Image (cartoon, rainbow, N blue to C red; front, side, top):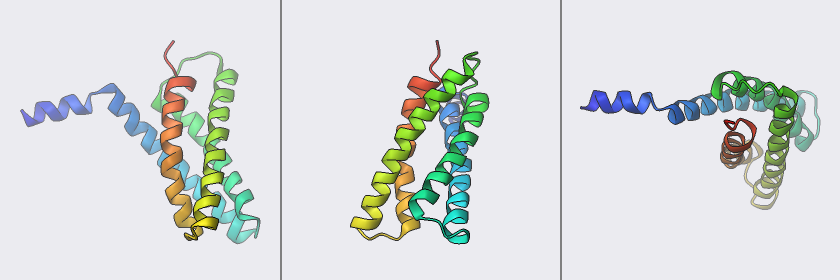
Length: 138
């Protein structure tokens, strides 16, 4: 009975999609943090500019992985789909930057802890918006 339940859970399409989205997001998170660190710590650039660059590098990666692997999109209007993904991501970046400013500057949490907290908020936005708008089944 437990094995049948485990098989049913693992074969659930939405759960597989969510797992792939999480894994794609984690890879994007690593890319985001790497480029944020590189720009901020190695190049000495402004932390918010560095955050935007890290986020942008992750967006490109995440679009490709989400289109091909997570949502398995066959939409032939790739440019339109990418623009929708980009708009969702820009809204996510706005949420990220505002929340990062609030948590770091106003509540005085360390920068990278603040960034990690904000990632969770933006994750929820990104999954819901992309599954309902960008990669919706027609």
